Length: 153
Image 1 (cartoon, rainbow, N blue to C red):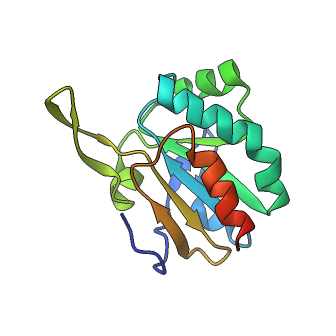
Image 2 (image 1 turned 60 degrees about the vertical axis):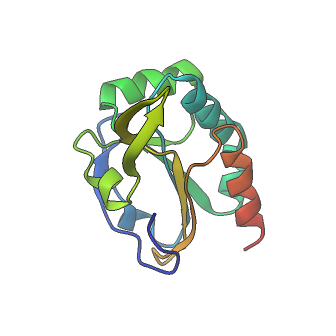
């Protein structure tokens, strides 16, 4: 995980519509940047749908939600449409941003070791500084937790 108080690495990635986004485009707003393993899996769907349900409240707090995985733009588009997700999903097929944010880790599942995205969330302030960093978050609880963090600011 990156340290709180450090400048969040800038990046440019395509969204589910193929439009590029830079983190620096969101200066002046708080950013909830969450990394998840895969579109259309049980945990990732729960997390995305919960962020979608709470999205109006994130907007009220002046925050945007950006989801990042190594899935393709096409996969993100299907995921967005299937669940009516109101926020931006970013495609990092090369894992450059995933690695820059230190969320590509060794994982153990059923005794098998592999590399993958560890579900993690960063809260970034209006100046691009990381103010909260959460690793190994619980999919269903993470969106509510992030909203509470915003309310406490």
